[in-house]
Image (cartoon, rainbow, N blue to C red):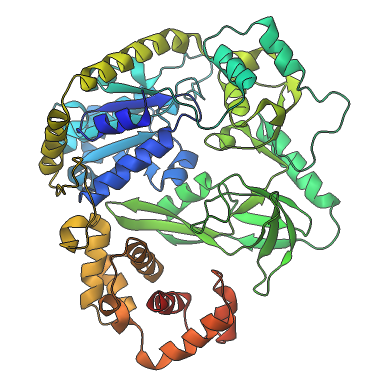
Length: 556
């Protein structure tokens, strides 16, 4: 199934299981769906099975969202207690579309507990209380953690999954790897048919006595190896280390979840010459999550300057990881978007794309571990193996059987929707949008489309609400308080509106005192580029970063 076919099905409001090989575009497709929902005025609830995956999608773990926390089982009394919590009940009642990322790492028990709480809160016996559910993931990747001596219970084995009866959208295109030999090896692992010539391809990538590339990240199966190598390599560098500490806003329990999932550490220790990896995508496209580089020095603001592998020089500054719920930021952490890149665990690499990696699979202990590590890399030439055991080439036998069912179900779904006329598909999508309380905007293709007028009906709900409040607010502080956000989030929303061409000067000029605009404009002109720290320091710290960003918007 193509991404376009899957997106068409998602837009009908059906329960969907979106799957496919690494690099097939699962994340891209679900992001397109989320954008379409928001453009239609429907705010999805975005969750994930793990903290790391949750930070990638700007959401929270399903455990936190549903209120079940770390519980391994729930009695009827437990379900009643959780459902009676006001904040849990409110978010579940408001939910319209629930997205669960990395569902392969979600156990059947956790899946059932979240379902039970949703049914109780919404007083409905339908799966998840009638919320539209989109499950995203690939069961060939890392499985749920099971108790020692217990069998893994995948989410698809749950009766709730069968009741939910999701349409399977199995993406079959490949956007990460374009190396035919490498794709053949990965496919062989995936179907459990690794032959001698596949092993020979991998054996040819064993480093042996030679030195592996110094600047490529090393992937290990165990944390102990990662910590030892990162600290050891940093200690070899001359000069004093600089430490950058994470800052946070929001409720402690939510902040702790963000910190655990963030790929940048709470305390980041760096030296000049350190090999690093960016852990977030740059809004200006200067780097992406996984871009490699070396710290070449420190900027005037004290933050690291990094020369990427492609030769670009990037002056870094802290970025935010946010936890959003119903369009509102509930918690955030800020840190320099870097981590030491000498080594990382296979688990933390899931979701990344790399040009090269040094991979030690000699201690692989989990089904799918080798497959995840190898599939992070774009080409076989970028794989440098320093160890490989038999488990590294194995995937869970239960998944081998189930995958055939998923593929067959996906083909049947594609055929069924292909038989529908465009008018029939559009009618299903219209009904879904209206049932969710959204606004259908015609663009000739039956898709939601943002138009300049009427703006309130065409904007994503979160931006429309912010714009309305900003227009009436006396100050940025008042707008932030009214919206329940920090000032930087309000400015970020205005920047998004500017990008969409849906922000006018009269909408927000009153937030900036008229007597300081010229001063800030001159400082911006004297320090061209996207980095605002030099402007802030040139102004002597008299004006906040948010005020500077507002004046920058006035110039566009």
